[in-house]
Length: 115
Length: 116
Image 1 (cartoon, rainbow over the protein chains, first blue to last red):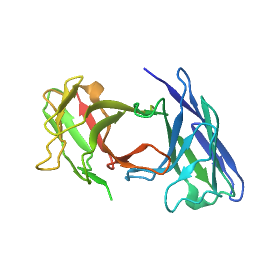
Image 2: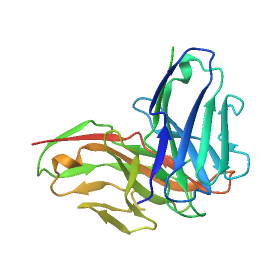
Image 3: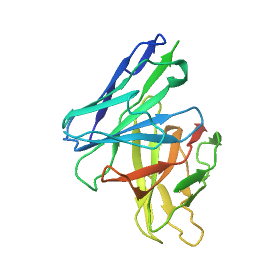
């Protein structure tokens, strides 16, 4: 099946710094990528949807200037958490899909800890 | 808005026991329903799905039936194995996001541990 990777799997950063998380579709072209955030014992919460070559669409309540998303190619999307604070500590998961109605394939997630 | 409620667990079963994980949903229209599984250290994988009422999704011995009258999509397996230990997420696809695609709404996940 289709494989989606994320890098890094874990990252610890200091408050005020920025962190970039990469999401790659390894064996298919992803026209759409999704970024989720998961809090302990809570659902995955959709943060934003990005289509290759266009600006990401953010869900209500998600700060687009804080969570910068770039989907510059059909196999790579990046999420940059800018000026990170401890409350940004979470598990971030991406998914990728080819075509309008295809299945979403999920990455393994990235654990971000801001100290 | 759309929502999914599933039993929170954790659920611990002995090998070969019967498994049920309850899932109910709230949505307008006619959503598609999914069960995803997340094994330790891996991404979510689609386990099964159903796209209309009375459909039964099945895979790897797991089954779930789309019940519109009870707005439910309970996951069942007749005889679990140690290798089934994972977190299971119920989800629906119904809302059309502003980005031009249907988005998934997830339940909180249920951790299943199967002991020998």
